Length: 399
Image (cartoon, rainbow, N blue to C red; front, side, top):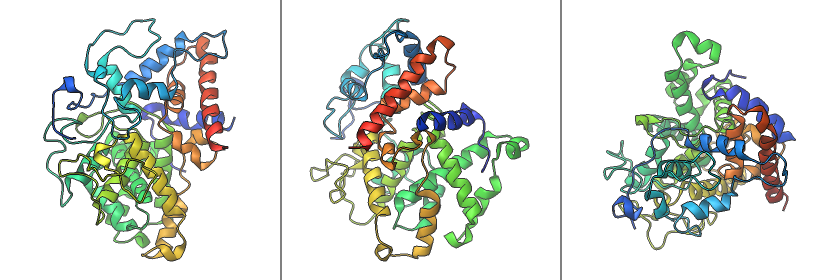
C-alpha cells in the first residue's frame, strides 16, 4: 500500500472518514451570466463550511442550520435547476458585499458564491462561457473542440489522456478515465514532492516512467496498477476545494475530473454529434444523462450532469458480458480487477450507488469539515453533518 503524500492532510482524511462512514454559446458580458472567467484558486467553500459549523446550534440536534440541503444550493445558483444545460444564475455576477461574521444565508460575495458553484459541479466547460474567449486555446494533437474543452477543464495532460486510452482501449473508457486521472495525479505528486522526500511519502516516479514507456497493458505490472488505483482512491477520499491546477486555475474536484475525461473519450468516438462547433448543444442533444442512447452535449452541460452520465455509463460498461468486448478481454479484466472497486473512504460499507452523491453538498461539507481544524465546541455539529450524509445515502441506496 503506497504512502500518500502529505498535502491536504490526506492521511487523516482517509483513515477517519473510513471509520465514520462505517458507522446557445455566444459570448456575452458578465452581467448576462453567459461569459465569465473561472473563479481563482482559494478555499472559499471550506471557509464557509467552517464558519457555518461554528454557528450551528449545539442544543437543537434536529437542526443543521445554517447548512443547506443540496437542492437549495442548486435553486440558488442555477438559472434553471431543472436543466442539465443551465447557466449560472445572474445573481452570482451582481453585487460583491463582504461576508458578515454571523451570516446564516448563502454566501454574499460573488467570488465565494461562484467558487462554491464550481466546487459543487454547477459550472460548465463551454468555450466562450467558461473562461476567456479563446478557451481552451490551441487544441493538442487532433483533438476537436468538443473533446479539448472537456479535457482542458480537468487539467489532465494530453499525454496521460492518450496513454490511458492506448493501453486500455475503447471498451471501458470510463475506467480509462480513472487510469488517466491517476497518472496525472502521480505526475502532480512528483512535481510537488522534493526528490529527497519521495521515498518517505511513497511517491514512485519510476512507476510513472514504467507505465508511460509501456506499449501495451501486458507490459504494466500488477504492482503499478495497484499503486495507481490506490492513488486514485486517496484523491477521491480527500475532498479538497480551491486547489490550483495547471496554469494556476482552480482545480476540479476528483470525481468531476474523472467524469470530464470520460466525456472527452466519448466525444472523440465516431458518431458523436451532440454539440455545435463552438461547443454549444444542438437541439437533438440529450437532456437526460442516464439515457445513454441519446448523448448529451458535454461541453454545454454542467459538471454535475456529466458526472451523472459517467456514473450511468460506467455501470453499463461494467455490466457487459465478456463476449461484448472487442479487444482482449484478459486485458480488460485487468482494468476491471484494479479500478472497478476504487471508492472513496467515506463510502464505507454503503453500496456502490453511494458514489452517485459524491458532489452533493451534504457529502462535500462533511468532508470539508473533517479536513479542517474543528474547534472542540463544534464537534457535535460535525457529527450531525456526518449523520446528515449517512441519512442522504441510506435513503437513496436502499430504495
